[in-house]
Amino acid sequence: MSNITLHTTLIREYAARLGFDHCGIARARRLDEDARRLENWLHKGMHGSMDYMANHFELRVDPTRLVPGAKSVITLLLNYYPQTEQQGENRISKYAYGKDYHEVIRPKLHAFLALIRENIGEVQGRGFVDSAPVLERAWAQQSGLGWIGKNGNLITNKGGSYFFIATLITDLELLYDDPFVKDYCGSCTRCIDACPTEAIEENKVVNGSKCISYYTIELKDMVIPSEMKGKFDNWMFGCDVCQDVCPWNRFSKPTKEPAFTAIPEVLNFSTKDWEELSEESFKKIFRDSPIKRAKFKGIQRNLKFLSEK
Image 1 (cartoon, rainbow, N blue to C red):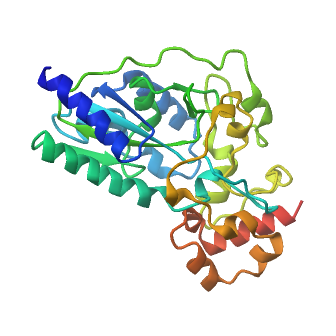
Image 2: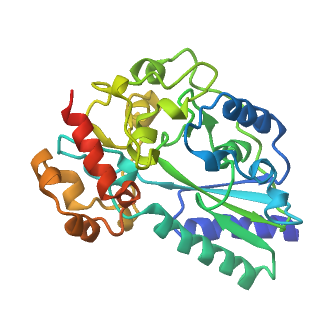
Image 3: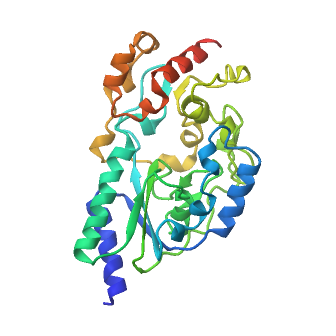
């Protein structure tokens, strides 16, 4: 067995040992086609007020700019599909049921790189989970893990789309997976038809500036446009409509990651509970939750908006 083959086998073993559900590997290179798509998306202003999306463009499309001498991009998927569905009226995206995924995945990436260095040798590498300008979904497709659906999400034919995506860029040469070239969405348009704000356009383009997740999470200290009233379907934090209606998510299985066990308040809070929640209690209950990203004021704004139907 060659060193490259052995190293690739070890990489996959370490990923499984750390609890990742899938691991794919692609050759590090500039993503020219994705660069053109991103440039066009930004030019049309589909990022709204998310100005950070326009920053560091070359870093986003070329991993060798992030890790000099990079040869491989390792993509890791971690299932977050919940054990139990939310019961409350004010809906919360499934990714935010449990602990903040950054705090769960980041230590796994550190441990992953430590295992590589301990058993393979001193390699250069950096792990990312929303912490740098990396086109995670594109790299997942390039490494054979799935295809990009019409809703813009990575879809796997083994478990749907409820996965967090992490990336490790390294100068280690490995065996590379074939890109996932098939598109199993076919003529289905369920996500496009179901989107409450018509944010999903043709050719797998999602207008981020019209997405409920954008309005309820990313629109910091700003008023939600009045024309959106009555369109949120009670989504208070994020939105899962385009994933919930996707036929491929009938294959979703509950996560095995204990940290993603739902916070009781997320599952059971009523509208009254949310409205009467103090800022102090909010910070205490959701200190380890992605919900804190919207901040107390943001959640109160969202609640008020939903009540003004």
